[in-house]
Amino acid sequence: MKEKEVHFPISGVRICIDKLEEGRQQGRIYGIALEGERKFKDISDLVIKIDNCFNEIGRPQPSKILRSFGERESHQPYVGTPKVFHSTAELLQKTGQKCTLDLIMNSRQQAEWQGYLRDVEGNIIGPFCSSLECLRILEKYISKN
Image 1 (cartoon, rainbow, N blue to C red):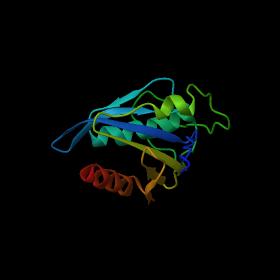
Image 2 (image 1 turned 90 degrees about the vertical axis):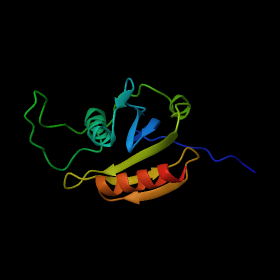
Image 3 (image 1 turned 120 degrees about the horizontal axis):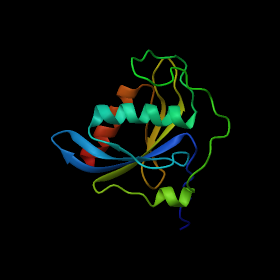
Image 4 (image 1 turned 180 degrees about the vertical axis):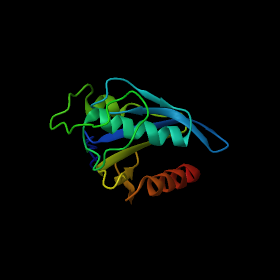
């Protein structure tokens, strides 16, 4: 049987979950167009870090400019060809101690996420149309594995 080849798109991140303590998922986020790892300490931090990762990558671009009281740029421009820091092979070697998933973001309309989650073999776990729906699929997958 031929092994399935997994492609990792620019608009995707690998979520490596290292700790699961009373609903607190802790781990790391990697992306082909992200220079280093991004650590998260719980599920709400994961949501913020994922949004920040895609803002940094430059695609998919958010459809709305969100207000911020911080000192960061309020508008994240679209980047047609983001700088690539890692190969697909490098990224596929990153794994979490408890669980590993890939989040592929197709768009970010109305300040929400649209895309799908897949397992490390490239099988689609489920599509989502909002960040809340994404988190529900993520938590359901984690509880099964």
